[in-house]
Length: 440
Image 1 (spheres, helix red, strand yellow):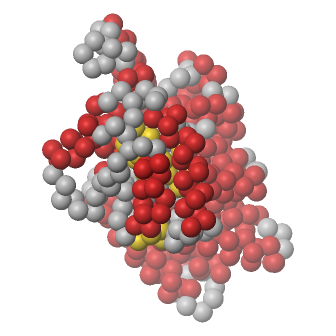
Image 2 (image 1 turned 180 degrees about the horizontal axis):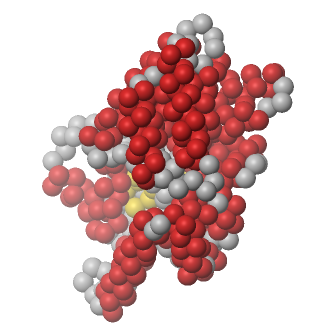
Image 3 (image 1 turned 45 degrees about the horizontal axis):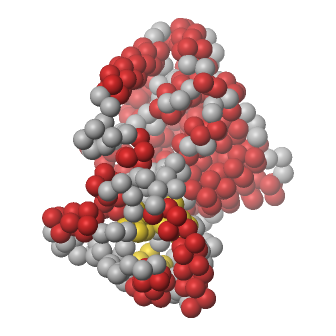
């Protein structure tokens, strides 16, 4: 576990920092002694632990308590080693507000109360009580490796190899089918997406990756209602995965239920942790409420909430341009003194993040539409013309034009320079023509 005091990176009411030295001394060390073990604290801050020493500790220790309170890739690596090295004796623990690097709901773990970071005597006692009851029981259970592979490590049933090989071949064929749908002529994509959905009925699906891909196809090629219906019909274990819960919230909002989507996303943040994506999704729902509001008071309230959540998402990770890319148009719409300067400053941050993603080959389906929005904010008519040519060639769906056209209208409306605004309006008219139903 970490040493000294560390930032948690989570939102209130969870503590902003935790004194992990106090957590060890007042809660975990006495607990381990009470359970009858000799406590040894693994020093992750020293990166100086030689790998052989780390492997020896993981193998020979009678009990390993892996604390997941902070997202740390080293801990996950060490858990994997212990799961394969020993049949039992590895227990995952963490604060009840902690967010993890990936979904571990299928692995039993113990959450303990950690309402403040200083670790009072009362908090330490509550932590010990929570762990004392559960750790001995979980320590006796088999690790996922031994549960999944009977006979591991040297007597695994060989027949499973052919089963896994067939599964991998099926997944590869499915991914090829997904690519075929996305590359099909525009007038055929909907029918092909629906046909793929029917081949993989939601109620009987067992592979999360297939569910995610089909949801994306339905979202992009058919409609939000169809995507929502597919998610709702999935088995509970798959439907509850964070990425599908996020998509369900987005689908709820896109089909008109913005407030339910906001509530579900806030619950996901509370139970699964915060992220730029989730704050951006919440900001997007408030942005839609702002645009649909009937009174000036509601418009001001929803605009304020949208900006707050997008700003929160941006501060969580400046390299994630999704939240920040939505801010310039909202600043311009708010129109306070200095907001135009803020919009330009944020646009620079977004461009740096986009350029970084492209250079690292980490760009995604939203990078290009983000660059289009930046060109509008910057009033770069030459770049906009070039991008419009690409959109005409590739189609509005690839460029997510339906999702970004409102922001482009806002940017155009609030552009002060008359000549630039005229050029932006001409480009906007061209894009609206491309987006219109029946456009080639």
